[in-house]
Image (tube, helix red, strand yellow):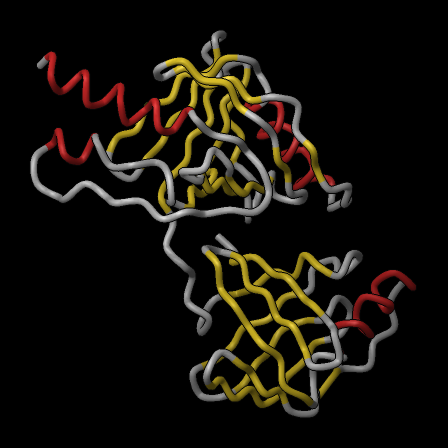
Length: 260
């Protein structure tokens, strides 16, 4: 038992040498499957963690779509509160983690997303956190008993996933779904859209879009015009966890998160 506790503490110490910033995800050897002890010793570094929920003052809040944390072995990690990306420094002692003042992007999303984001950011910044890793789940607990619950995430499939557009700003309820039959459908913020979509070698070739002809408020129409530039051309795509990035040859970049 003492040996198992020692191994668990050593694993948590590796977690704790963390930072919660923007750009890193170093690889890490993963403990093999088998005994319950081996499951408890799975690493937290090199893993993309999806933030599932936050419990504050006894009330549990579902985290916004796209909220995540990736911890790097170099003491850095990528993170998103659900709308904004963040990075910070962390001091640790054993299984105790203290996250410093974060640097964040300054995007605004709808009220529900921002409320969830506020809960996630408040919990992660609540001073000393206790880290507990069991299998594919990570729990961070504050001194007052509030918790952030996370789970290990795999990349969402490109096809069949409803991708909710988060960038460009102002896209509102824009979303896209790619079908294995070679089409894409969805909404560009105001109007419904359908087009051919050929996926090959990390690129998607989109045909001319078929759009409905509604008029919406200016911000939605501006975002829709930006999204329309993806079509009738080829875009490079990448799926990282539950985030899809499309970058067209004309420089248009669109980000979307998988709906949960």
